Image 1 (cartoon, one colour):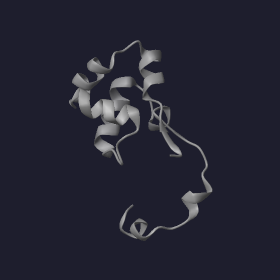
Image 2 (cartoon, one colour; image 1 turned 90 degrees about the vertical axis):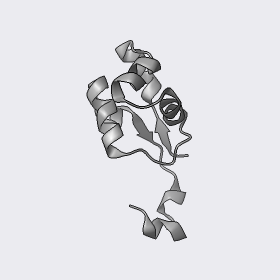
Image 3 (cartoon, helix red, strand yellow; image 1 turned 90 degrees about the horizontal axis):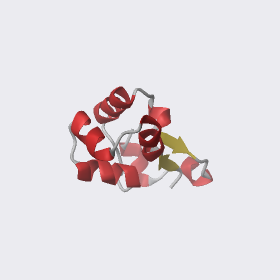
Length: 82
């Protein structure tokens, strides 16, 4: 997967535990764990904004992208997503 979640590095830099972050953002520890592991297919912008507000960062600090030429191939369900 070319999109990688780098939230763990930000938690380390901030000296914060995932449990604390989940409580401050208002999501379950399970939801946060799934996001941290990259096992979710999406995240609401509102949740991403809350993560950034609590961690005092920008979305690019939590996500990374590695080029994959396959990303340029349009899939059938890509037309219905944005």
